Image (cartoon, one colour):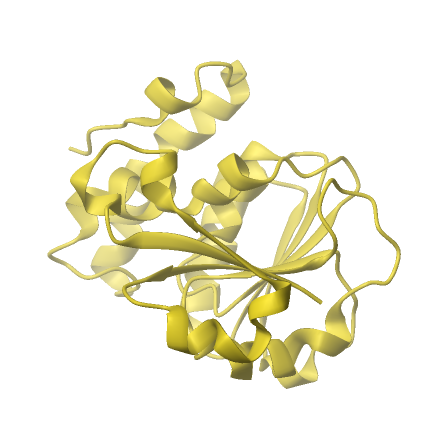
Length: 208
């Protein structure tokens, strides 16, 4: 059974948010047994390694109602599904090029009754809509990701930070961010969380 650290970091969750977050454990255990979207060795760390990790973005920026967000390379729904639970007044599109991963996303979204998130089996290049932010968990080098999604970023601003890309990455990033260093902010997740797991992990924000 997963130890759920969310109440410690997010004490003001509503009852329906707590219910939805609590439901993730059984849902992902059941679906992961059929379609492997999380490492079998890692599924028991669902809340720490996947849910809490995803919600670092909520620590970094509180999205205003009406914000549109695309989760690129969502896999089994991270960070998009935890963020959709956290921000019910925002709209999310989860994109992945692997059909079975999108099936898991669809089933979790349906089971949770989330009406602010859609999962789509497609390649990023085929997405024509525009968003305030694109979020991602380290699906490719930062420069490639910026080139890929630049055309999907809305010009109109509604949040406390300019529209752009928010990535969850780990390790040494100085070389990777060098081409866009004047538009980039790196925040260690140890600023938000005390667990050792987050000691080398970071949020990388690029204004686009």
